Image (cartoon, rainbow, N blue to C red; front, side):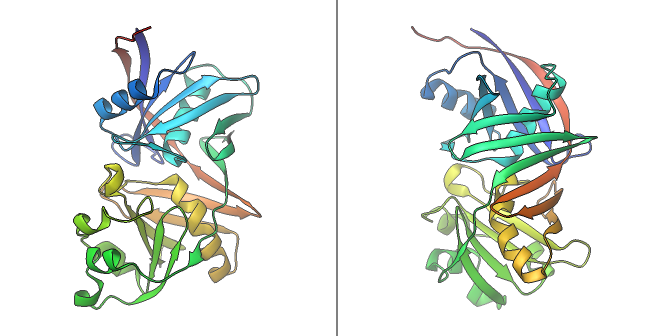
Length: 268
């Protein structure tokens, strides 16, 4: 079987920025094992697969080791392919997913994700995070710990976010997807990073879905609904986010890096 494949840099204005995702359009679903094997072979943070539905598309996302319930950058990458490579003429794409209905609109050179908000709840800091982020020995000032799809640690200052060098052996033992660290920023409203070693992602470059968790916190703390954010990974990525009730809008650009075909054997 011959399948088209694209590699898209999401939340990026040019190649080699943002977060790369593989996108594989399908006419019908392959088996879970085959899709997982393709994702493992691609060895990117996420590979997205989608199939047409009556109203739009159904979408699924796989890391190199597991399927995930929600992924922002690979949805952005998929929308880029649908709008620019598959000649989709509608203004908004509707996706069915494990996290419910997702929407992506095209606004000039931006793609706008419309995702469900995931409000975090306050919790104690797990011991594996204390050890994994070396909080005690470093003297970092933690304002609070929350949890949603990920654990979220809010720190006193932006410099701490850049300085942290995690021990992934501890973070791999967490019961949630990963751990995010965030702080208020001078240039942006806030900055963040995400570590998810249990999913084969030591540090994600730009994590669209993370901002569905961060926005409820920062919106309440800063007293405004439209915020700018920067993910402080090596590649980095800039996002504009807006809290709209139980939904979060996440805007970013994307560029095509690679287009080609993959050959696989599928048993009947």
